[in-house]
Length: 241
Image (cartoon, rainbow, N blue to C red):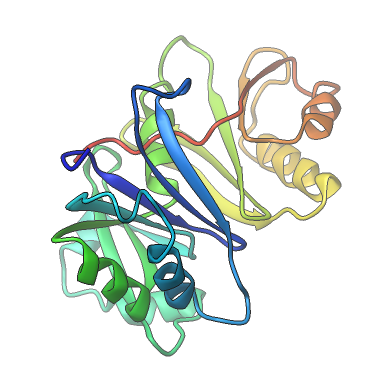
């Protein structure tokens, strides 16, 4: 167990801790905690350390998955003297106590820039000697990119998480489209998906819509507009790196 990487996912409402476990049906051991909104995410994680069997299990390797706004920068710009923080602040809010994390996604020729709470990062680093930090979207992109070019049909991917829907499409070695929308209501999510579908000029008969963790009511509604819909019920697992 000590050699397995522990994954800590901080969402809008929930803290999820997971680790590979051959003894379980789905190959993962998972603990879920509802976040106490009256205290910080870092304080919630500190509390979890007092009760979580996984957190107390002796792992030395942790992956922290963060759900925060993401800015994608082409690698050629990221490798210059571009002021990344200024660019980020033009699009999103960088709050007091947050810092930017920049991860290179080589096969898509971009850097993913997102904010991380400093206290939360410190709590994880205080407990684990080996810590990686990723956006919650990075495992999803890795998982879907591997399948994006199988066959001849264009694939539009949607991922539902934390009362949002992330919609993205790949071209060769790059993003063709990527954006995240608030999706508290099913009708709003349907509107955003169909709008992007139309914007990209996709074929209702021939191209594919892939939905990860989408509500069944949404899927049934979308079947009126898109012939080829594929669904997945689980979060893609992060790749080892």
